[in-house]
Every structure is written in structure tokens, then in C-alpha cells.
Image 1 (cartoon, rainbow, N blue to C red):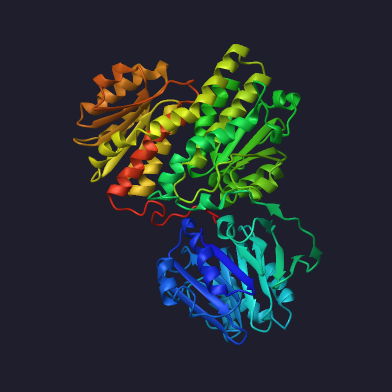
Image 2: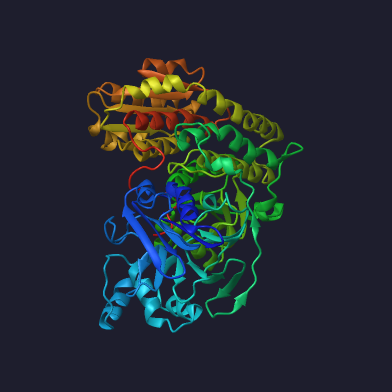
Length: 608
């Protein structure tokens, strides 16, 4: 959430700032602003609302000359969305300006101290504390002032800072909030995420916790919190710059759904060699895999739903006990982690604050940690003992589709690897699974090409107030994700329930005309699920069923049926999710919602 861009060089900064911020709109925001230094004064423009308002106010940046500047898109935490609360923020005489991602947890204590020293606050934000604290400690040496405030601030922050006394320097700082820097033609650039810089550079430096970077037009120097110089190596970003553009699609979400066949294939194929699964980045010998007695999966949001699916898959296929935790609760239950436990952290961005905190908790307790992420060089990737990348490419829409699908496949590969090494599946079973796995990209494409049928059905339910998703086993896990997709983008109230729990209270919510989406892909559970469908149907519900080809019995209890191709029982979620993604998308489009940037949501949740 929130976005930072900064530039220093020989080109006009404002157009670069606006362009970079436009590539970060997907992160979620409610106001935006830029500050540009022309060598004499630091000019600032900011406004509530979308970035286009800021672009109009500055005539696409042409009214703010200068080759040094910082910009920000804000997602409100402290203080309502407003022009005053928008970033950047000045000190009292306009000689220091700051943009900030994150939360300063002890800001009230710091604010009280600064007020006692005569400082006045114009906004309700925690960020204004940062710039006044810099002013308090500044004695002409920017680096010294920055390190002093780092020792006093608690919480998370990525900062972009300009000092009027130093017109040829741009400073950036990071603690628990992502920040990258890179050298461009004729200058240097900072940003909170890769898409903002792809147009300008492919070689970036990932700033680590409590590191500072000082940039001029030609140089880049890195320091730790003790002001000691440090050496860093750049990482090459191989993403196609067009991957962060819509490419003719109406929305990024639709484009990314259609990228799923390739993304899934890119996740699978490098790990299949000579009929075997080879996950070199796992960093575990066969003896170490056999020694694992428990797996703990920790994640948030859609990644948590992948974890729920993976519990069924790992336990059923590899016969390993699995616990799944919402990352925000993991630390607070003081988890018991034994020596033979593998902790898996699932995150699309690799920067999810709660997941990162859970990772550190697990490592502090001595666990071996495997990170499964999509972003190369992200915090979770760097801090895990080993990392497995999903290779989904950049995902711009806030509601995840292709990154989620790639995580499912990555966990399937992991389960198959563990099952084979531990000798709990036969070679014939393993070979059949490989065949089914290879077919998934084509089967996903087949489902996507059937979108008109789902679109027509979605148009009938644009005015729905409540939608319920039900399933058993892995189908319950996919129901959770289908429900989340719908509520994220359409703002319709939606809930997922384990179908066996209906009679324990939930069925009281079902009334005439209620839409119930039933997922049934597990053959041994068909009869029980059909009974549940009849239960809600007799109470007036309209039942949408998602099931396997050949399950004609379902039509006796369903009002509308979507069939998915047959596959291994453990892989059905990779197919069943496609019509549910399309359903949520077309409902949202029909209701006129901002599909790519749903209200109040952010792509990367980098604060707790």
C-alpha cells in the first residue's frame, strides 16, 4: 500500500514522478502529491483523489520545473484522505520535505515531545512527525540527522527525503517497508516497487532494513544506521515492460486472468526434468525431506486460501501433518515449532508485513523457512532460508488471479516432490500426476475461452445482496477464494462455508432468491454435496454448481452448472477457480466498480 517515487538527474523530475506513480496505482491509494526542487525553492502540489487530479493540477508536471523531486500515493492510516494529509510533508520553513510509506508506531510520543519544543502540526498524519524530527536533529549533515531519527522511530518506514541545503542530493531510507533504487540514463531513481522503474532501468538495488542511500545525479552511496559505508550488488529485473501495461484488455484483472495458462506453465516446466520434479531452490536433501514431521504454512488473504488447499494436498498426497495460520495471528499464539518442522511462508509480493513478521518469529524459534513468493529480491525472498519463485510476472490488479494460481501449482509441485521422496505414492501414480499437471495450462485456457456463458449468468445477479459459497474438502478452500474474489471487486456481501456446517446456523441466512455457489470436484463427496444443494434449494436458493465433466447427477439439484475438465483430484482447484474468477470479474464490471483498484484495498499490505 502507498507508493513512493523519487528522482535526481539531468531530466525534469515531475513528469518522471507522475509516470512512476501511475505504475504504482494498483497498490491502492486515496491521495497523491509531488515535491520538486528547482535549486532555489521546493515546490509542492498534492490533492485528494486519483492521480489524474494531480496531473491536471500540474499540467502533467510541466508547471513544476526542477531535476530533483519525490512523489507519493497515500493510503490513509492516520488521518482521513485530504489535501492536507496527503504526502509530501514539509518541516516548518519548507527546507526539508519527506514522503513515507509505513506506520510510525510511537508517533504520539514523538509528537508530544516536538510540540513541547515549539513545533506545530498541520496534518493528522504520523509522517509529519518524521519531517519535524529531522528538522530537530538537522545541523547541516543530512546523514547524521537521518540516523538519529532512525534510532528514535518505532514501526515501519520507507522514506524519500530532500534537504534544501543539499540541492544535488536525494536520500532514501528503509525499515520493514519495501524500497528499491536504480541508476537510469542521466540520473538515479527510487521507488517502492519494480513497475515504477522498469521504463528507466532493469538493474536495481533492494534496500535492506535500516539502510540509507545517498544519491546524486551520477553517484549512489549506501550506509547502515551507524553511518558506515556498505557495498551492495544490483539485481537484474527480467520482466517484460509490457507486462505492466493493459495490452488492449479493458482491465488488468482480465488481462492477468488470460495470462494464467502461460504463468502456470512457467511455474511448472522449469521444475520438470526427465520425468522428475527438481526444485533446486528448495535446498533440502532427500534425507532432510524424509526427516520433516510437520509443515506449518503461514499466509494472508488469497495466499492463506492456497495454504488451506495445500493442507489437504500435502496431507492426502505426502502424508505429512500440516497446520495453516493466518499470518497476523501466528505470532500471537506463541507457536510451538519443533526441530523437524518446515515453515512455509506464502506471499505474492514478498513484502506482506504480517507474513514477514511471522517469518522472523519462525526463524527465532529455530525453524527452517521456505518462502514461496512472486517478486525476486523481495524481503521474504531474502530473509527465508530458501525461496521458491512462482514466476507469474508482475500482477497489477489488486485482486490476485495469476499469482494465486501459480502459488497453487508451486504447492502441488512441492507436495508431489515430498510424496515421491517419502515413498508414499507409486511411480505409476506419480507419472499420472505429471501428465495431469502438464495439461492444466491448456485446460485453464479452455475455461477462459468459455467466458461468455459465465458473463451472461453474472449479468443476472448484478443486484445480489448476499452470495454464499459452499464446498467440502479442497472444494471448501476454493469456495473461500471464490467468495473473496467476489466481495473484493464487486462489494457484494459474500461468505464461504464448509457445506457440512450449513445446519449449524448458516442455513438460517438462506432465503428466496439467495445465490448459493456449490463447488463439488471430489468424487467421494458428490452425494453429500448434492444433499447440501438440495437443502438450500428447498429454502428458495438459486444454486450455481461448479463440478467435473461427467457429473450429470448434479443437474438434479443445481439451477445452473459449470463443468471443468477432469484432472487429478488434488489439482481441481486450479481449474475450479477460473469460472469463479470470471464470475466475480463480470459482476463487478456490470456494477460499474473499479475492478483493478477496489475501494479501501491495497495490493501489497506492508503495515500490520
